[in-house]
Amino acid sequence: MRAAGTRLGWKGWLVLVLVSCVVLLPGISSIPPVDRDEPRYAVATSQMLESGDFIDIRFQEEQRYLQPAGIYWLQSIAVTVTGTADDRAIWAHRIPSFLGILAAVAMTAAIAGGLFGRTAGIGAGLLVATAVAVGFEARIAKTDAVLLATITAAHLALMRIYLEPKGHWWRPALFWAALGAGMMIKGPIILLFVGLALAALLVWDRKVAWLAELKPLWGVPLFLAIVLPWYVAIGVVSEGGFYAEAVGDSLMGKVGESQQSHAGPPGYYLSLFTLTFWPGSLFAVFAGWWAWTHRREAAVRYLICWIVPAWIAYELIATKLPHYVMPTYPALACLAVAAIFAPGEGKAPLWLRVLAGVYAAIWLAASGLVAALGPAGLHWAEGIVAPLLVVAGVLIFLAAAVALALYLTGRRPAALVSGLIAGGLAVITVYGGTLPRLETLWLTPRIVAAVDAHGTCEPTQLIASAFREPSLVYRHGPYDTVLPDGPADAAARLAGDTACSLALIDASEAEAFLAQAEALGLTLESLETIEGQNYSNGDEMRLTLYRAQP
Image 1 (cartoon, rainbow, N blue to C red):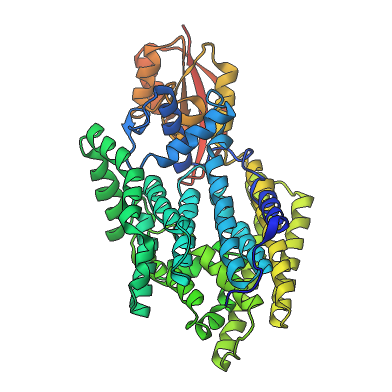
Image 2 (image 1 turned 120 degrees about the vertical axis):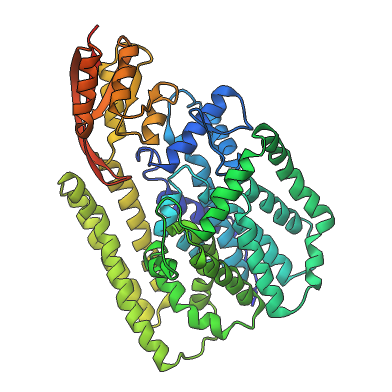
């Protein structure tokens, strides 16, 4: 199946990287910290840099042992290199995520290009770059974008070994290094994605001789050299607490029961796939018959084993979030472009063509939803009609409709181009044009601005009772933000430092706060009121900033 002269070349790589940057960068600096996970990572990274302790992980005084230290190290490097340690610039923390997605895009292009040709490689890479879920992960300082890069790297190496067992030393080196890096980013999740694919291949082929090319005699020590130093150190520092929380509570707990209300029945990911992998979902679903008819070809067999076992496993795991199956996207993109650029597809049976017609209607409806997200979201949250976003929405839907029409009439390469235009424009519109302007939802920046305007000390201690989101802790500072035990405790803490403290109180708790303040003999001054919605829990908030008169 491997085509002759399939390396992308420097022009192909340049196009891929430039287009990916145009798609992935808008919004990376203008979207405020997104609650709740992102600012928790950012706070822990900031405290790591300030304390100089790169082993233990903390959010304020609490231990944070959900994941290993790898992502905090990468964010620390990004913050240090950009010189933003004192600026609380969330964009610096997002650099590893952006680079992780960019690396995954490039490796997807390398896999597809090596199998199906240069144009297919660029197309597959851009299908990953323009996916709705990928666009979000590229702009948020968490683990999943970098995890995607490590899983894709491990599969790139393993696939090359599987297809051509005799080869260069870099392939097993990359495989074991990627496993080690993945273990340092999010623990053993990478072993699930790679291990299930490997097990499926062994069952399907009933051949094991090629595994010797993984070079385990020096590969396993390489893996352990990456992983063991920190895992041993954190075990000593935490007295085993890290393993109890990260493995016992976080990892194993997600398997048996849903955590943090992130539940969903089997079929959850399949039902969301049209939106999460949009626009690539059209080409991936339509490639299903092609993949089935070519399943005896080694490369297609590998891609199927990359996708199916991991997908089934995540459908069965109790805790579900839309991005959990994102590591299958590179393989889906490769199969999608294979059906476009590789010849030899047989005619699908009638029942399957009927289903394809039904899915085409579903995908077009999803395209309309994606096209409306930008202008409708801004109008819903802010009451603003933005003509430019409306025009962009119309263009997104038209490009998607053209892509569908071209695919159904057999002009598949042109359909891919039109679909990528729709996807790129949608990602830029939503993440670059809409989300940064949702001031009603972004309470933290307005709170911090109010504290800066009214605070009389440097630093000012902020006592926040009802609005306790990690974004506020990050933006105002982990050591200058106090999260009291209710409004009465907030009044007591304000009484303890009337000169340099401000209290942030929601209307729902104002009565209790004011009563306790009166009992403590405090004379309060109302400084500013901030209204909006806490999108993390859906609560409408009317927050008032108070100062105690001396």
